[in-house]
Length: 163
Image (tube, rainbow, N blue to C red; front, side, top):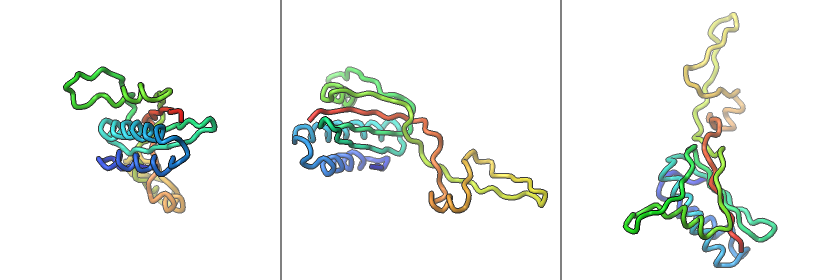
C-alpha cells in the first residue's frame, strides 16, 4: 500500500491491516500488527518525510510479515524514552511485541520528473536538460506519467508477528 506523507498515513495503515488480515489470523495478532504497523508508518512520515509504502504478508506458517519502506537512509535507533517524553517508544513496542524485526537498505525514493532529450543540431548531437533526472522514451514516459523513480537509497523496516 502506498501511503501519503502526512498525518493520515498511520490511520490508513491501520485500516489496511484490518482489511487485509480480516479473519486470517487471531484478533490479538491482528491488533498487534495494526499497532506496530502504525508505529512504523508514523516513524517513516515523521523522520523520513518521504513517500511511504507498506506491505503486509500472511506467511505459510501463519505469521504476519510487515515491511514499511521510506526514502531515508537513516536507520531507526531503539532507545529508552524518559517517562515524561511524548515520543520515542514506537520502536520499543516493535521490539517487545514482535517475534523479530530489522532494517535493510533499499527503501523508496520520491519519483522525479523525467527529462526529454532534444536534438541540438542536424549533425545528431543530443543534449538534455541540466537536471540529473533520467530520460524516458515517449511511450514509457506516458506509461509512467513522466516520472521515474530515482535509485533506491532509503530503507525498509520490517517485523514479524506470530498468530
